Image (cartoon, rainbow, N blue to C red; front, side, top):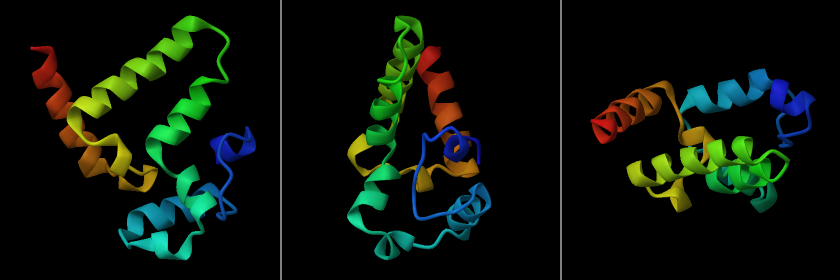
Length: 101
């Protein structure tokens, strides 16, 4: 909801609840989305577009650092926001902790 209110995420979903329901359903709903809406849910594209909105170098650098960590964990070209579930985040957290040791 917050991303949509700030104009940072515009999709066919009207509310954050609809996005949450879509993500939690685990369904392959990409067939329902047109290419523009699908790319708005593409993790790397969304993040790169979002980091350009920051004027401070440190804020943008934090997003770049995060992208680097995620790319070390998985293939960014195939990662969509809807792929990031609680289970995915737990696995990612475990992997990042191993990277940092």
